[in-house]
Image (tube, rainbow, N blue to C red; front, top):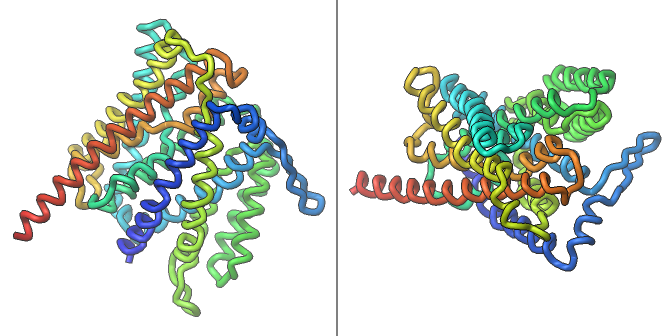
Length: 399
């Protein structure tokens, strides 16, 4: 059953991968066209949500990042919970491997960046930029090239990326937070506990929608990232089927939400975040220490940290390879973790405050785009080769 559910997800993502790529390409084209000013003005335009006495004002960019992407992280959290309880990650060793690899995938890029910055005289403040993995784009690339590969590899990537992102969110909270409003945060915890207790009984879908809406609203008021509490909310959704209906609330939510996430949320996110203007770019900026440090941190640091720790965990018997996968395939996924893109751009904006067209911001964008593209292309080649090799071996075994 778990395998059928994962295959259904892969089928949807394979169809949405092209849509996501086209949305990102469209953003780059628009950001470097005569429509550039209108595009960036649209992202900065403020829109109001009014529900009785509750009022929230956010820019389009923030509505997409903190609003729509909360639904994405909810679906990711639901899938990870399902895999931990019923699927691939129910083996503690297979759960340990992506978690440990995510830690390695955060430490190594930071060290690579600091080494490059020290050697070339770059700013040391940029070390957090290459630490994150962009889940949406990494999954899109995997969906495009992952045909014939074990579905366990996608679960490995998904788990690693979410741990990576949660680590990046925690890092943002420690290094760049302006303070947390504790009263709304305590209310978030209260609502989560209430939903966990009430979830033991049969609850209609509207109650879960209202509960998630309350958690989302309170998270915004607390100043934390909604992605964190969206994953926490997923952990309280029941996975076991109801005796009355024989249906699992968690599986139903995954099934209902996934098409909207794949074909609406992620393409809108890509269109909003992939638009980078290259106006006024010079060769000196393209080869600046900050650019090289971020790019190598993503491309070199990520693959060393993720693959090295995953291999070491398996050798030391504290972890295990994904089911049915070989080390070449794991290496391809490790490369894919170097797609930092939107999360790295977000951290870069915090690490180097200033206008979007400031020299350091432009260098951060160049480094992130360069490192992410190198990682995506290299991963696509390796995973394609690995998929063909696996197909040949399967044909030879069947003859």
